[in-house]
Image (cartoon, rainbow, N blue to C red; front, top):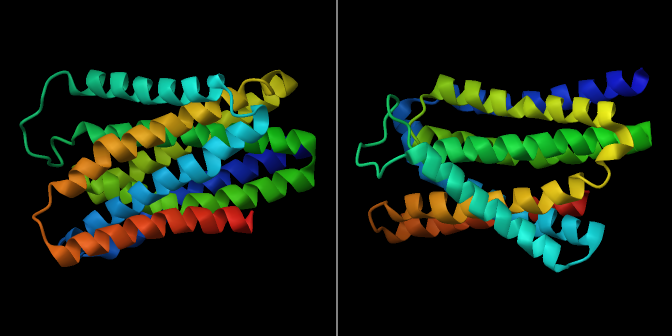
Length: 249
């Protein structure tokens, strides 16, 4: 029972981090517009960093760098492509607005939901091993989530969500961590062979979202040396944050 209580309390705390987007609710629309593409750039770095610094090395550590890891990464990329095609239905010429959010915003929500589900599975599984390991894993996930949630919020705003809707949808995707923990506790050791399959699959999702959806959004901006340089800096900071988290872990 104590394992359930601590595990659920941990994933609820992790889910609450999605509310960090509330911090920008106090920004005026013009102020938010000025930093929006830099938040998207930060998210690009965070997604690439998460995939190549955290998820893929973790998958390799679990089962070695075999063809299965490569195929699961490719499956994640292909699956994201299929999901995005389903969301689009047709080539969209309607400008992004709160009444018409673009599909990359929903793709980001989908990728985040998958990632949070995996986090919940990992946190729940770590508590099944021992309480100290569960607590240390929770802290690692919390440090990992804070910068990513800020970047995700920027992506949703850029994709046409209003600020309140972005916070609400971000929270909904974060709640999949609770589902993941419950599944881990119910399934127990039966999940041991399943989680390693989800990790490279999630990496493929993140690579697709960052490379296919977000970077093209950055290229739509008017050419400006200063803005472009700041975008590169923001991407680098996103990657650096993921590297720093790895060192802290």
